[in-house]
Length: 284
Image (cartoon, rainbow, N blue to C red):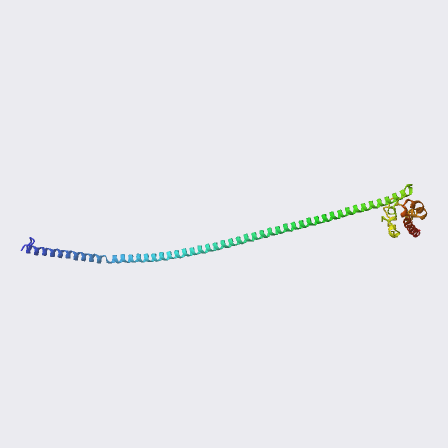
């Protein structure tokens, strides 16, 4: 039957052709293999040398690789050591820098403290100097004030002394002026007892009891008595004795007083005359 246009013989023929092709292919392949084996056998020693060379080169490459690996490891180790050394140096440098910074800060702090202490000491010295100057000024002012007070007291005392001297001199001048008027006046007839010039610094003497020897001595021998500076004690006593002697006083002075005061004036003058005579006797 020719189902696909081929006969059975054609198919058998094709099968046989295919088997023939396969046989030829196997024959060629076997031949190639034998040739290869032959060539391989012919090339065996050479291949062994090549293999040996390859093995040697491989060993050399392995050794080189190992050496390179070792060198690389050594380089890495050295690099690591270098990094470690650099890190150590960096840390030491950082530590040194920090230490220098710490010392610098401490030095600055010390200098600031010294400067503060210096300023405080300078301020203390200035304050002490100011206090000393203030104390000196205060003392000077106090001394000046005390000096001014002393001078003022001295001035016032001098004024009082001068005034007292002036008053004393004026009192003596009044005393002498009254006696001059009593001796020379022809018209006096009514002199009051309190107006009489008695040889004492007390005015208004109205009784012998108002006169003492001490008060008389103070008056008669006073250094400021005008006109008596060069007279001796006896000469001064003599002047007063002549004024109060009863004969002269009673005859020349008493009549110039008021009549009601004459008896008391005689009594006082008599007591004065006795005291003056006694004082003269002592001087002689």
